[in-house]
Length: 458
Image (cartoon, rainbow, N blue to C red; front, side, top):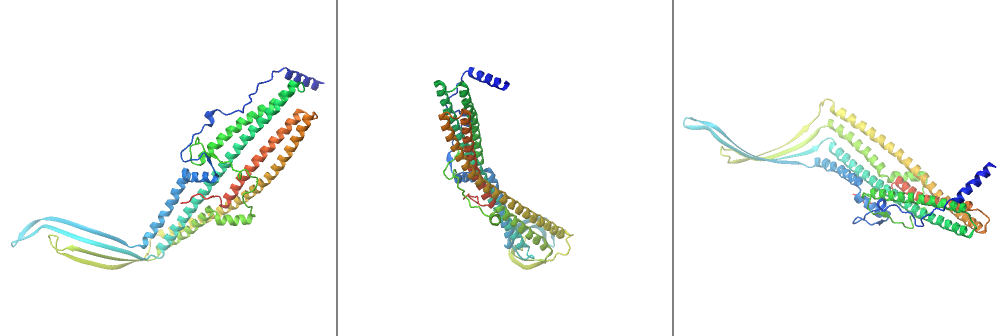
């Protein structure tokens, strides 16, 4: 009895309330919160490839990576220089004055001028393989630097793709929220008409107005999330956060069809080991460390250097009467004892080699984990799309049947509203599933090292 009393009292209270006035237009965020400005040379609607190209050109993160990659190439030229001869030239002029003295009628001392021109050539003949090892070490480091840069390009492309699809998802969520508002407003207007016809009560109208109010709140939040996602997208491209740039909404990006081929785990790992620049860079780092061991060991081997010089110098006190002179020779240097420096440097190089090998092993383990997680995520995302499609079809069927029953007067308004909520949830699930699939595909191709999408390399 108490429950019935409370229910009747609540109904009476609701019936006495004035009907709130809801605006019919779709709510919008203030212009100051979403206003953007165009930038010359940047399209306001971009495809994924265009977005990656802009990021490659504009992103300061990639600019720093490019500088590091170029720095890694310089030691190659420095190492190569040892094979070329060293040629130097010198010219000297000197004049000295001494107090002269007379002896037997002759003056001894006074001014003296000396002039000379000399050219020297020195050529390394043998150094125990140190030059070759240093050159190979520099080349391996240069290749590793290039591969590190390539992985950073892939990382930037992955980040752009994630921001791209997040922006698309937030935009689609806003459109869906607008649709939900319109659907609830339509339902509310239907109840208003029934109220005027005397077939519905104010309680029914209040019941219909609540989903409308909730949908408006969800719409404003969706608009805010879209504005935030667009700002993040512009920032990822290396642009100011208020630049007007947004993803182009193409049919392929909204397709439920998979856009990549799912490999088995073993196939995917094998492919990643061949393509992943970070793993290849780690391999070249190990190779460079091996050559460094050779470089340090070669300090115990003899070196042979040839040298030659040619010059001319004055032979008189006035700096005249030049006479040429030349010499040719070779120098053999044999290390005997260097206080243990070479041994210590060799041990240090061996430890660096062990460290590089452990980093390679760690990179491989990380690669295998990335591939496994990305593969599971992709398969899960594909399954989620299929289930979301089935959910959406069932929700539409239920809503259609409930609407027919409501028009026939054999069901209640709350059940109709529940059916509409079910459809909204199904549409949201489908939206999240589609863009979850797109992002899972990007994660998968990034794990395999295939997501550069034509981005420029140095």
